[in-house]
Image (cartoon, rainbow, N blue to C red; front, side):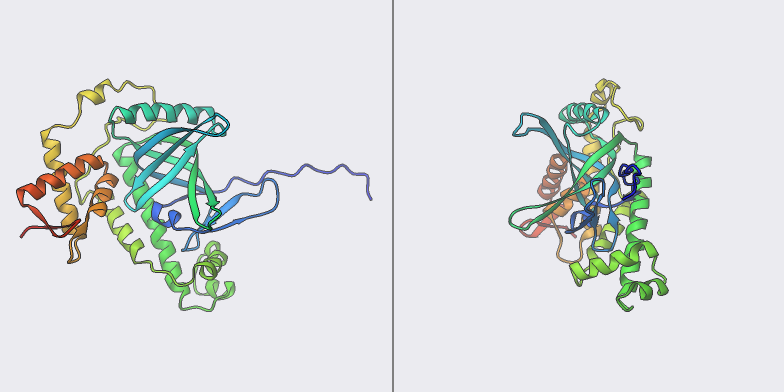
Length: 319
């Protein structure tokens, strides 16, 4: 054997971050990881996205501490976008700046502040002993954002989802080989992973993704009223006082605006049978409104007779 020194194993290159809605990432049950110490973990979605890092955004809906078995504090939270929830956790492994930010975010959320958050995070994958698969996020960095920044993220995420949907539909008419997919005009980056996804997931229904895109663009293009976050500007740390926000808490006019949001949602989402309770509140939350306030507005509309329940938990606008 030669006498040369062994070269240390190099760290894997930094992976690109996907702008991705919660529904696509959260439904993923396929992962891939090499055997090397620094080989990254990838989650492969139903549409063939091979995800190691994500950029997500939405309403910070929950954040709370949990004590682990070794006495450390693990912060767990969730971010809601128009398609559903992203779950994340921040523990001792996170950068100090990220841990400090989470503590400050929790305090502001406890004060009732509406917080729109943009986050870059690593994909995580867990399979229980029963075989259930869960995805979550390990944040690398985050910032409180303005409505304008949120709209930009919504558009970019919707465009990416639409591109992957088109590639998936195109692949259904082609032979299941990389060469055939490439010849059919599908981005080479997706070819291998579309085949892996097809083998793992089988036939999938993408109609829900179409609805996600419609809802996402509705918000991005301001076709529907939505709450405006009380945070004044993007930032990577939270050092400003919340006194001004407290002085600008919801008024009666905002309650009226929220009732109009609920009505607009019912009109847009009703496909004949009404709109179910959870869908209404989830969509209101994705637009930056507090779920409890949305439920109260829905109750008021019901009491006024503006909306009714054709069956329990489903709502229609009264004609």
